[in-house]
Amino acid sequence: MGVEGAKPLAFLRMNPLHNSPWRNLAAGVGYLLVVILLATLAFMRAGWGLADSFYFVISTVFLVGYGEVHPINSPFLYTSTIATIVLGWLGITFLAAALVQFITFTQLQQLLGTKRMKTQIAKMSGHVIVCGYGRIGSMLADELKAGGVDFVIVDREEDKLAEATARGHLTWVGDATDEAVLEAVGVHKARALACVVPNDAVNVFITLSARNLNKDIEIIARGEATSTKSKLLRAGASAVVEPTHIGAERIAQLILFPQSAKITDSGYMHALTAGLHGLGLELEVMAAGADGPMAGATIEAVERTAGGTMFVVALNRKHGETLRRPDPSTVIEAGDGVVVITRAGRSTPRGG
Image (cartoon, rainbow, N blue to C red; front, side, top):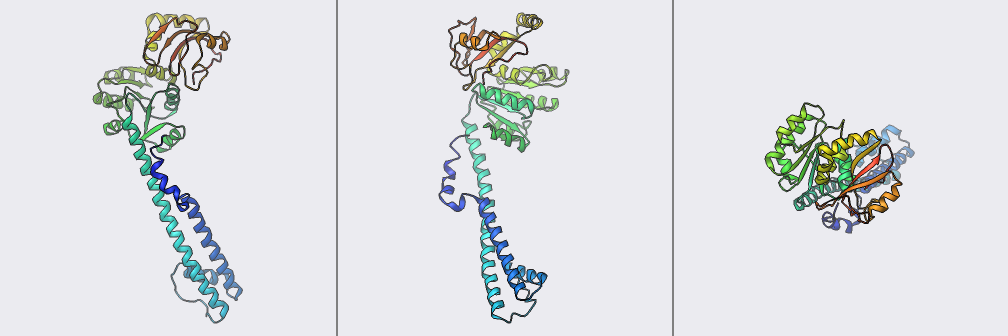
């Protein structure tokens, strides 16, 4: 997720005590338990009962000092008591220091993590904001990553964002209906915003807020109920998708390749799509991911690899140029949108 957060932590790595707060905490607890066990066994060896021995050791180790439960009247008892006091005090001191270190280190990590995210978002421009990291949001994030687009995910649930962060996505904890949160993730500089929260009312509110803050931003909103589409459009959505008919890949296409989307959304292409579907064929737009099999290959090579299950009909360059009926020798670049006709239900090489 970047090197900005690595340098502030360098001073922690220089000192081995700061390397693993968990290890220090566990070591302190383990040491103290060993001292308590050995001291209890020592007093039991002197003839004390288990309950009396354990009680005396605990009150001594934790410096309570209520008094002896039995007389200390032999060199062995004197030695055992002194050893319990000294070793117990060392254990309590180390454990307290480890606990403070653990709490401080955790808070510092959170502080630096938040600062790093703020720095990264502040540098972003022309990025995409994904509101909601559920099933559709996670699929959308993967598609956008394959398309090589900068984006940030906003969600209120930290456990979901922890999963997104683990997948290498930039995240922000907050309620996307709050204009302050949208401003924090750079809505004024973003080129697109996707509302994929599984709640129509929330998506309408997010759309209203985003449109109020940025009149030019492209807003792709998810609508579960059919009646919600008109509300989202009136609220300022540029396009509305229904998960029952259209998935995360389609939302990504609208964001990544608006020119290709216009091709596939035209009345003629809708009619063509219906005709193709009747023949067992489908028309779709694939993102050529940087690590995918399409990037760097010619159209002819991709079609040959697909073994007749896919034919390229248009190519939308990452920077906006659309090539209709591209030459077979044209090289597909990472981030391009490839408009293809595929055989329904057949496996085709994906961009990512």
